[in-house]
Image 1 (cartoon, rainbow, N blue to C red):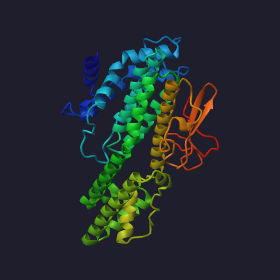
Image 2 (image 1 turned 135 degrees about the vertical axis):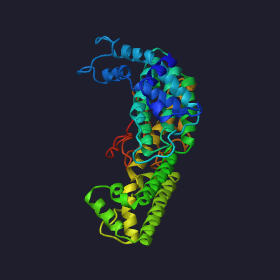
Image 3 (image 1 turned 90 degrees about the vertical axis):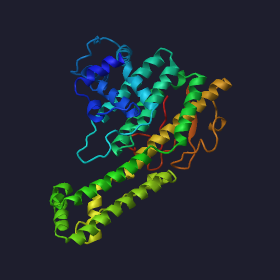
Image 4 (image 1 turned 90 degrees about the horizontal axis):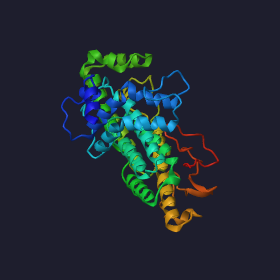
Length: 407
């Protein structure tokens, strides 16, 4: 089935064929691209659209009756495209790097929009497994999704943002099934999340890639002075900047070039230092102030050029902190479920199942909170800081109520 699906898609001019002209079999990104090609077919997309908006004008997939309940649709989707999940699992076992090599401003990444759809399938497959009592298999699909999400962000920031969105899809599915987990499942997730939290943030590799791209863009701007205006941009302040640089003599132009390259390196060195530092610093990271558009000195022109190329990271740090906080909440929830099985009851206090370090929120320095909620429990964080609610793409306004990880 895998060979059939991939063969049919490759015959249609696939992303895989365009991006990987010489496959090696040693790069997990190749499997990811094959999965993205499968997700890019009309039949695959029909299931996701129907599950999201079955009351709209979207037609159901060919094998779906409009009266089929949600679980039946998910099962048909999972059964038909299980090969896609197998590709993700295989790719996760290999080193992963973007096969394109060097990027340019014209480089496109069509696979990223499909990667999210692949993880929607992973979540649907996990849902079916949980419904069937196959909790171990459901857990593996969640873990595969999170490993995948961490590996796709090394090339550019957009990849890391897509990875965070994929993490959110995986967590949302897991959060609906904590009470179903066995002792083995809980211990597996405890070990898995502990290992993920013990390693560096996936954003670290992304930052280095963004630095290299920034240097490439600066170099490209100055390699052909006659094309500088086109490379800088067409906004009024960009046109003025290009005109000011074009007036410089060759020596001054080289000074602007060198100052711009040094500024790019210095900025991303600051970002990398903050990323490896204490997480409260992630929430207080400040982007550089806007450059003066009236400053035509060497340093002023360099600052204006760099402002066009760098990525402002303050909001990215908040998103990354939210992602890791959600992972810590999942780790603690797994420990609480483990405690339940070992002791025949739910914990009454967070101290019963965690160390001081484990129950301390790295972003605030305050303790996570555990409380019983009817027959179950919640592990929460204090939201009275810049992080707000534990979301992926938006940081909520701080709320006096804690944001729970379900259920």
